[in-house]
Structures are given as structure tokens and as C-alpha cells.
Length: 88
Image 1: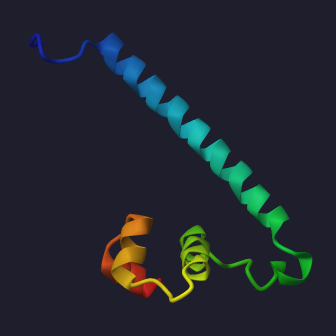
Image 2 (image 1 turned 45 degrees about the vertical axis):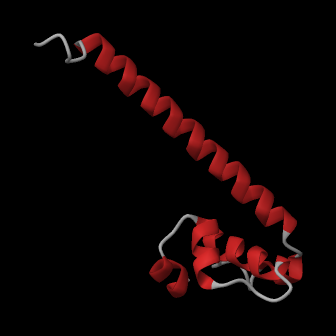
């Protein structure tokens, strides 16, 4: 083992922290999904049941831009490539 390599204890700490962050992220996503479900009116919930988070985000961007928004700007706002945004 060289001086630059992390020790087994340090690797376990990083792995444990990574797992904790993953658990927190998943718990947050579940809570966010639940809040979004509660925010959708009951008569629309079936219609938007299969809509993804990225699709909802794109819709919010489009609705908040009176003249629309260029695909390049929408892709940049969502942090995705133009082809992904176009497919969306």
C-alpha cells in the first residue's frame, strides 16, 4: 500500500458515508414524489400518473415562459443534452 492509497478503514468510512447519502437521497425522493402526488388535483391524477419528473419540470419551464423556450435553453435548464430534451 502506498501513501496515496486510502486505508481499509478510510475506505469503509467513505463507503458508509456513500450509503448514508444514497439512503437520504432515496428517502427525499419518496417524500418529494408524495408531495407532488398530493399537489395534483384528483381529477388529473390518473392522467399525469405516468409523467416523469423531467417531463413535469419541462412543462413548468414551458408554462412559465410566455413565448415558449428554445430547446437549447430547456436542455441547459434541466442539465441534459439537447437530444434528451428533444426526446422528452
